[in-house]
Length: 182
Image (cartoon, rainbow, N blue to C red):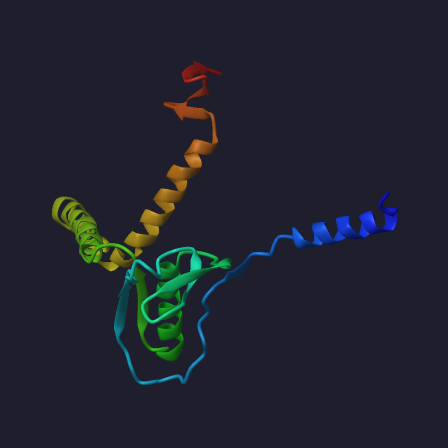
């Protein structure tokens, strides 16, 4: 018969050997550098491309002259390419305080499309305000156009929070996709 103490010791040793190694998650962080003043520019940082063997959740290490492995329990907290882009933007903004640094994960034409939309909005405002209505105040208050558009967006979004509508002085309630007078 095996002594009870020996069974307990063997069981504890077996359970200790089965303990899982904890997983560690890592993020990249910007490192403060020497600030350079007197530089004014607009810098756009587009998506960062990395080789396929690095584009994975595990941290890659060199295991031979032409071989790479990943650490099993050492993982990136988020996609590596996104972290590289964010850190690059943070570093540039900190080192070059007089510059405008933008992160653009999209295509190069995205900024052109934004400018085209703004140009169309200003053109419509000037055509209607100055051309059709002959209102000279439009030119003076043109800078308020983005403020008006933001407030319009907020009012539009807030309209989804209620279930009543006032139309021509009468109040109506929306219920189950139908409208009823109150």
